[in-house]
Length: 426
Ligand code: ADP
Image 1: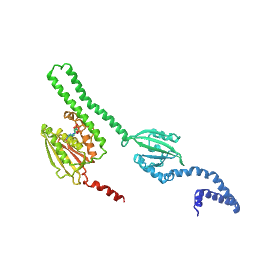
Image 2: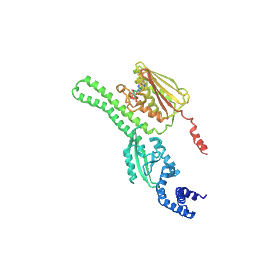
Image 3: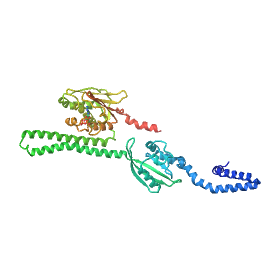
C-alpha cells in the first residue's frame, strides 16, 4: 500500500470506524437497502470529520508530538543540546519538561521528563523567569541550589518559536566565580589582619619611645629589638605573598629544567643546618644517589624544601630529629620525605594545612616566626611540577611530608615525540 494512503488511514482510522459503525446501526434500525447505508456512511463520516477530527488535529496531535522529545528535536539539535556544557531544559506550553540534557540531569536528578517544572525546580525566582519567558519576555535571574553542596547559577529563560513553541531554560554555573570572589575577600581580610598586629606593635613602641621611655636606655634597647622582630615578620609576610602570587601566575606553565631533587634537598639542608643547630635539632639525610631527575624550576624547588625542612625544625621537639629520605617509588615516581619527631598534627587539621593562613596553633606559629603561607606555597609548587604532596602525622609522635614527582622523560625523547604523534595520526 502506498505510504500516503497508509498515513491517511492511520490518521482517519477513528473517523472511518465511527462512520461504518453509524451506518451499520442505521442499517439495522431502518432495515433499508445498501444505497441508504452508503449514504448514511458518507454522512456519518462527514459529521465526525467536521466535529471530531479538527479537535484531534489541533489538540491531540501536538500533544503526542511534544510528549516525545525525540519528535520535537531533530537528532543533531538534540545531540548539540545534550553535549552543551551547561544544564539545559526545554518545556512545553504547559510548563512540562520535554527535554533535559546530561548536565541538568546531573544537577537535578533523573526522571524529570513530562513533570511540571515546579515539581523539579522549586525556586520561585526561576519559576517566575519561566513565566516571563512564556509571555515572550527574556528573563535571567541568579539563584542558588543549597544541597548537596551550595552551587550558584544564573538562569536564562527564553521562548523559542518553533512548531510547537517551547521554552528553554539554560543555567550558567557561577559557583567557581563566587568561590574565588569569596576567597579574594577572605584573603584580603587575612592579609590586613596579619599586618595589623605587627604594625600596631611597632607604632605602640614608637609612641612609648617618644614618650615616657625617652630617656630609658634599657627599655629603648628592648623595644627596638621587638620592633626589629615585628618588621622582619612583616617583610617575611610580604615576601611570602609575592612568592605565592608569582608561583600561582606560572602554575599552568610546566617547568623545563632537569633537576636532581636529591642535590636540591642536600643544598637546602646544609643552608638550614645553623638554624637546626641553634634549636638542637639533628638532620639526617639518606638515599637519593641513583634518583632520576625531574622537570623542575630550581628556585621553586629550593623554596619548597626550605619550607618543609624549616617547618620540621620549627615544630620538632627539643633535641629532636629530622630525617630526609629521597628515592624512587615502585611505580617510578621520584620522592623526598621530610619526617620529624615533633609535636605532630591532629588528623582533623591535616586536610586544611595547605590553606593560606591556616595554622594549627596560631600563637606557636607566630612565636616561631611563621606566616601561615609556607605550606600553601609548597602546594602550588608541587602542583606546577605535576606532583603530589602526602602528609602523615600522629599527634605527639611527629609528622612526615612526602613530595612525589614524575621523573623527567629521557633527554632525547623530546625530539622523538612529534614523530611518534605524526605516525599515530597517519
Ligand atoms: P607557618 O608559617 O605557620 O609554619 P605553614 O603553612 O608552613 O605556616 O604551616 C601551617 C601550619 O601547619 C603551621 O602553623 C603548623 O601548625 C602546621 N605544621 C606545618 N609543618 C608542621 C610540622 N612539621 N609539624 C607540626 N605541625 C606542622
